[in-house]
Image (cartoon, helix red, strand yellow):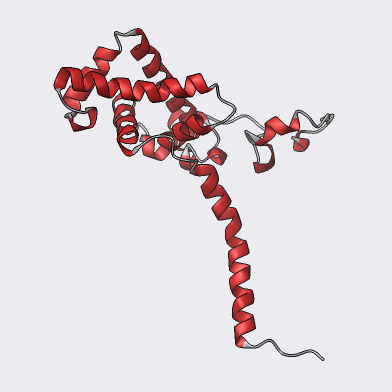
Length: 196
């Protein structure tokens, strides 16, 4: 004998349906928010450094529009990246702050913009500083050019600014990095682009 669902059963089912519908959102948040690899001060130093290296000017996209900081955090937590490369980015943040403390007796974040620019110019003369700034610029350019599927270059901001038209096929969720790394083990013969 079938019974009509009561209000309580209906609400439970509705809640379970809502919960299942939110799974992709939570999963994408997990993709966008890797485990913290920088403390609050390091994160602020990184943001302020990026604003100096890629300053807002006329139509230049903001690093916030490109989601550059999140891209760098992903890079720092990616198990496929050389740990020494990741450590160098973090060490550079700390060395920049130490240079500010030695020369200005303040943390980098406590300096005004002109003083921060002077510190950046100073470390550029050092081998580590030049390499570190170059790495930050490379990661910034990646966030400018990567497909928005990777939660960067939001609304194709970088592409629009550069008047860039991406190549085809564009990545899809099932074949984006790092998932694509697992596909090299599949021994599939690709005969059509939609198989990618």
